Length: 347
Image 1 (cartoon, rainbow, N blue to C red):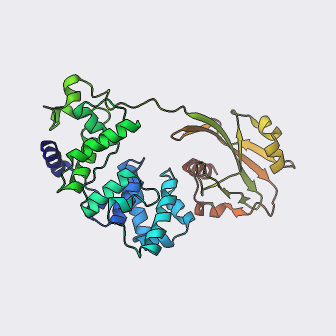
Image 2 (cartoon, rainbow, N blue to C red):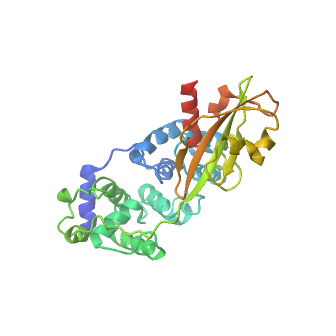
Image 3 (tube, rainbow, N blue to C red):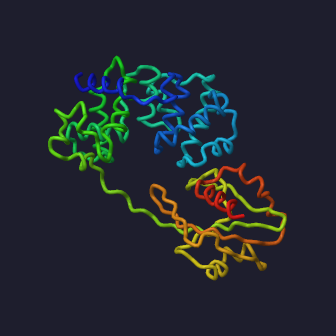
């Protein structure tokens, strides 16, 4: 209990004032937890406020079309989170009459919810003593207890979950979970942890053994795949272009993009024009220019996209039917959103 009491005491003095901490409404807690996966609090805050203003209840989110949900999510990345959120909102609204599941075992059945999110919602909203384990928790526990099991191994995941569960204050489960996450984010930071003022400094393994930089341990990352994208930004004389929705299970599912030619390396104008995909799209003569003189490298978790945007000026066509003035209505990947902003600034 000493660890738990010390942690909660620290939290009550140092906790962050966050909008989702002013409520126990599971809809708002759910939104915040999904948004903060793979996203810093500083970035996620604006999205949370915008999202809850647009969709103040689970019924509002359920009634929205997927495209508008993705548009609101634009820039947060990992868009499967938004699609799963929308899917589960429709389930809660239509099948559960808007009542959010109230136990860990029920919550984890929702699409897009794993152990961490289910534990957070169950403990914060319904006082169920189930421990959260995220990057902050891994770091705090591995350093304090000197655990060298890789945190991204199956054994490590079980070991840290079991340890966190043994430490949780069963009477203050939600407070404990928020405390350990805040402590990891604000005090036991990845770089330059505040060891000099740490309430655990007299008993921390990593501090005693000078291993704060070595802990936690992670197994080697998987190899990053390089991909080469050539977006064809079409502009007709009557100010029309082409955007199409990405289908399938790859990146950016449900978002819109310009026609894309993927190559096996960075290519020049001549190589682009001679490619079969280009000649199929533009059998007649077009005016072509490269917008970005230096390719844009967009980094995703497992792949890096080396991207060139080609401006294609061509004649009017019934197939080229999206007005440039209406492009902002479409949800697009942040890579394309950044291009559009730069393109408009240059016009």
